[in-house]
Image (cartoon, rainbow, N blue to C red; front, side):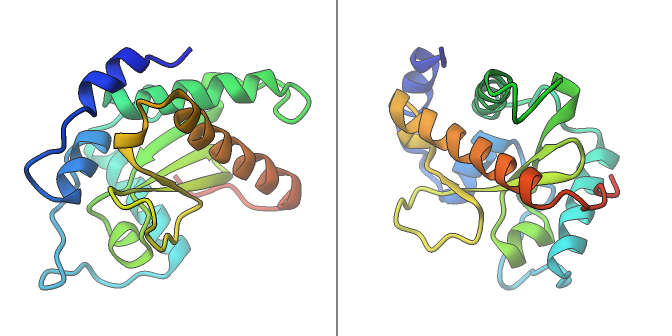
Length: 181
């Protein structure tokens, strides 16, 4: 059962700052503050993804199998639990097969609108966008509003969308090469 008491306490107020502050609370401090006047170099989608994952690993600021922030850790744990319950689709799944990486403050975030990635077996991934706007045009697979996470149904829906996306990609992209991370 998700820790709804924690989520209610942490998400009952809005921060004084912008959506960047919400991303930082949800995913940790970004690798760098990016603005339209300070954009990163453009990288194509997959190159930006791999670059972001390598940046996180090189800086050793994040544990992909035990996310550093409570909200990211809750999503990771619930996704893992849901996947383990689907034994047929995710046979033999272990915690080290699943990884959660923040990509906020990277070219992947700036140019492709992805704040975090959940990766299965270093191959298939679901992308997340953390935003205060529920009706935002989203480039990621799943749009997450942290202020809606106190609702157990909404939290479960976010996690189920991640699981469904990973399941679909694993089924439909069997010959994909693992990410170079």
